[in-house]
Image (cartoon, rainbow, N blue to C red; front, side, top):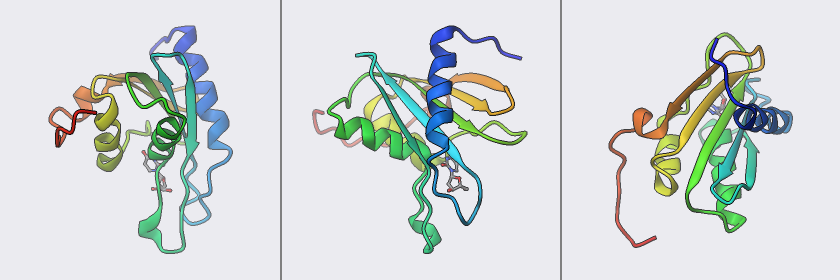
Length: 136
Ligand code: THU
């Protein structure tokens, strides 16, 4: 099992706490995410489902939008993503693209409530994101 540092483990802890606030009555699959910015601020989110299933928003995007709305939209160091089950919760393509808009080089920490961990990077998960340069 991958051994992580205390910074990574505490980011996972925040993501796990956020996960408790997931609204997932349809899939019952609760996900929590926490983004740490280079200013050392942490922004968390959980998935929010809808009766019109396609309107569901993943935990990673909720956390990203919380960060942006807190005025902390640049140079994110890392995101931790936590879910329950055997498989590690790797972010969907839409969330990869949204994260890459702000921090294409960030670290991505995948974790389960059972203690599995994997550390990767957004560049590895999404090597060639779509970009429309607008000087942000
Ligand atoms: N989900 C996330 O929140 N993050 C992911 O990385 C993948 C999937 C959510 C969306 C939906 O509410 C539930 O998990 C099942 O797909």
